[in-house]
Image 1 (tube, rainbow, N blue to C red):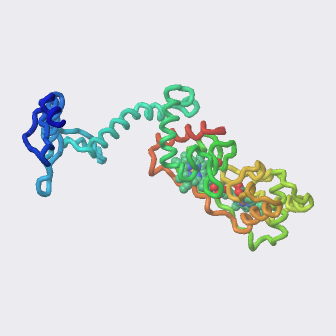
Image 2 (image 1 turned 45 degrees about the horizontal axis):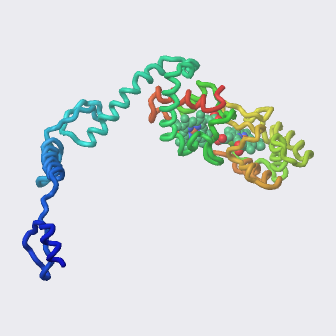
Image 3 (image 1 turned 30 degrees about the vertical axis):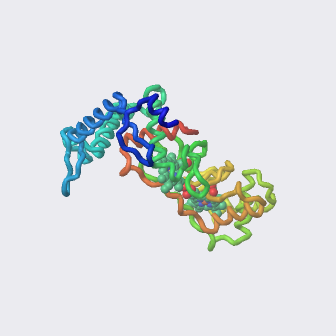
Length: 306
Ligand code: HEC
Ligand code: HEC
């Protein structure tokens, strides 16, 4: 039967025969395949000549192609093509493309920046990138903040003030909130009374008589809370003392505390130990003045700017 088939199709074979009847066909590869094969060989040789390719001893063939870029010291250099130089060149181009915008931002008053649609969309995109690189580790992506770490920047509650110049000050020079510990000044009952007074602003159902006593203490010379938090307990932006009346919390995790006693305890904990961990780093050595101005506008428009 196999003999039959062979004569009918008359295929070319290499002439090798195994096991009596197992033969190897000798069909030529298709032309298109052969052409592609030779082109790829030619292309490979081309690449070897143009780009860095072969290692030779401790060095390598550098190729004919060159690339010109400005290095991190600001010196223009031309060298054989390589990916590091390519990266620097692309970075140079990106910086150059942003430059006119930054120049315009430097020369435009704060209030006008957001009104220029072109400039405003640059602030939003560049601000977002700067924010996620530098600020999001603490203030979180989107600026929502984190209890016990860094404040929410999207609400109307400002520790240090929401005017352009105040925000710019905050970012440029940093901030450090400080509240002294009261463990040696006040006893436990007094701290409970003060906690009840503070919580009464947030509609927590505390003992009214205790809150009343706390009110008196708050404004007394013994505790002198009013001195930093203001007579109305709404805080003073000069020192970043928190507004205690708006039910927005940064250090005392009142929302997570379930019972009234738990809520009292988180406040008492702050009064007892004081606060010294609210450190907003200064950015004047890490960002340019123009980048800080851009972030100020971005921040201001993120929420609740004044
Ligand atoms: C290491 C953490 C950390 C980083 C990083 C950080 N911040 Fe802050 N930021 C804080 C803390 C903590 C405070 C509150 C300081 C205080 O409680 O006294 C704060 C406060 C602020 C405030 C004041 C808010 C108010 O209510 O007045 C602004 C504005 C601000 N940060 C913007 C930024 C920007 C913009 C960046 C990025 C360039 C940034 N922060 C990076 C921790 C950080
Ligand atoms: C020397 C100034 C100063 C005095 C006095 C002071 N505070 Fe403060 N207090 C602050 C500052 C500043 C903050 C915010 C710290 C920060 O954000 O880094 C703060 C924060 C708080 C907080 C935390 C709010 C939150 O969002 O978690 C509570 C509660 C508080 N103070 C209550 C009191 C009470 C009650 C007294 C009186 C016993 C008092 N403070 C006295 C400066 C002061």
